[in-house]
Length: 141
Image 1 (tube, rainbow, N blue to C red):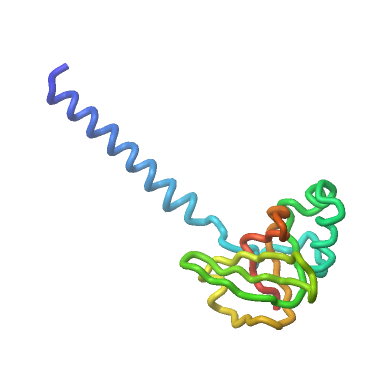
Image 2 (image 1 turned 90 degrees about the horizontal axis):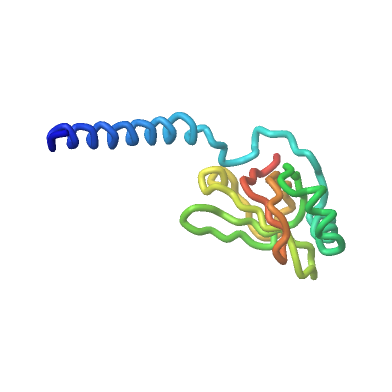
């Protein structure tokens, strides 16, 4: 093969990879949901009850709650924000652990939430790391 033919083949391969990447990015990953707002909760419970369940039987709670959509109700302890997302921490008074709820920043921008508010939050349970973690959250009205 000549050098010109090799350059043409390499250029075509690079262009093919670029087209595949763009198709994946714009048509498949574009539709990935950033919250569970439109989904029905599998389980509804109080934030304190969810935390106690994990504290007393983590393996059993993993089986029961992990990767499930949970609607948890409780009192907002604090709200933390960074460049990409917002975390709302639900915690019972005098409790050491709580429920950390992670929101996409655009999803959370619609809501005004502050410490002390009684609230319902729906999210996907990701497990327990000192706190119960819910991701892709949305505020329930």
